[in-house]
Image (cartoon, rainbow, N blue to C red; front, side, top):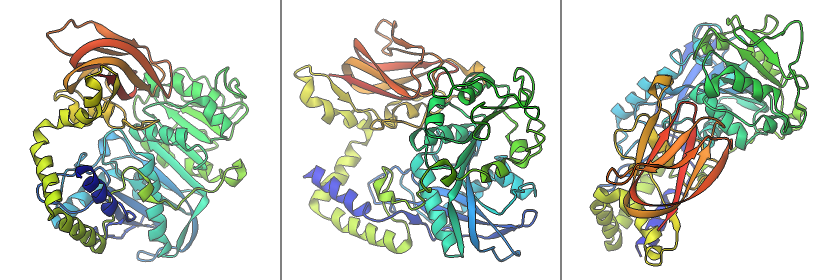
Length: 529
C-alpha cells in the first residue's frame, strides 16, 4: 500500500507542466550600452513544504533573458536568432542542493541577488552586453540560466529554459527563430555544451565551447554535421590545446579525417602561439582557437571580441554563429516546445494557483491514515537514509547470493571528500550521465579520494564506471580500514563517453574512489549481494 500511495503522490504532483514562477518579479532593466532590455525569470518545480516531509529539489532554474529594444522601456518585436550561455562553476546559485523550502519574499530576493553573478562576473555575453561590447551583425536574443546543481547544466534544464523563454517572449511580440538557436559555454558550462551535443547533435545550429571541462567524440561532430568553434588556453589535460586539436582535426577512425587547414588568414602553429586552426574539410564548421598565454581564462575577451587570438578577419563569434543555420546543415528546426512532464526532474507546476491546488490535494491525501504512515516512515528512516535506499533492491537476493544492482545515492558519500563527489552516484539510471566529480582546477589538488558507504557489508561482484574524458587515471579500493587496502580496479580511462564494467570479488561496506588530475568520472555503478 505504501508503494501505491507514493506513486499516487507523484502522479498528482507531476501531472502539470513546469511553468514560470510568477512570484519571481520580471524586473525589466534597460541595458543602455547595448540597447537591450533584460528580464529575469525562474522555471520552478516543486510544491510548498509539507510538515514532516523533506523533499530535495534541484529543479529551480533562475535565468536572464536579454531582448533587443527600441527604447528604454520598449522591446523590438519580430523574429530573432537566440544564443544560450552556460557559465562556469564560480557562478552557481547559492543553494545547490535545495531541501524543503518556503517561498517567501526573502527567498525570491536571495535568488535575484545571486542571479546577478551570471552577468558581469561570468565574463560571457552578459558582460559584453553590460559593457556595450555585444555587437552581432543583427539583433539576437540572449538567454543566461544559472546552474543550481554542481557538475553543470542538464539537457532538461537547457531545453526547459529555452521553451519557457519562447513562451514569455511570444507574449511580448518576439518569436525565437528555430532555424538559428545557438549554444555556448565556458569551463564547466563548456563541458555541458559538449554533453548536450553528444546526446542531441542535431538541435543547435552552432556551438562555441571555451576552455571546456571535458571532451567530445570528433567523429560524432562529422557524422552529424555539427558546427563547433572551440577555444583552449594554456591549461593541460582535457581543456588543453592537444585535446581540442584532436577534436577539430579528427582521427584516423573518423570519416573525413584531415590535416590542418592552411590559409594565410588562419595559419596556425598552435604550440605556444595564439592562432586559429580550421578543419581542412570543414573550415566553416569546425575550428579551434588557441590562447596559450591565458591559462584557464580568456573567455571575457572572446565574448566581447577583443582577444588577440581571434582571427583578424573574424573577431565577432556571434557573426560566425549567425552564419550557421539548421536548414543549411540538413537538420530539423530546433524543438523549442518542451513537455517537462517527460523529464526526470518534473515535479509540479509552480504558479501560485497550481501550487495551491497541488499542495491542497497532497495535503488531503496526507491526512489519511495510510499517508500519515508514509510520512512517519519517512521521518523515522531519515537517520538510516544510506542503507534504506538499497535494502529493498537487494534483500531478496542476499539470501541466495545472486548479484543484483546496488542502488547508490549522493547521501552515501562520506563527508570530507574534496569537491562534488556526490556526482559519482547521482545519475544511476542514466545511459549518458552528465554530472562529474570536480575538485578544482589546480593540479595540486589531485589525486582526490571519496568513500561510498553502502550501508552494510556487501560482496561486490561488478564495478562499472563512465569515462567522460578519455584520459587520466581512476582507482577503486576497499575503503574499510580494517581490511587490506589493495587497489581493486585501476582504469586509465581510454573508453571515451562509454561505460566500462569490471568483475570483482571483494566483501566490504566501504568503497574508496581515487581520481587523478585529468580523469573525468561521471558515474559509478555497483553490483553485489
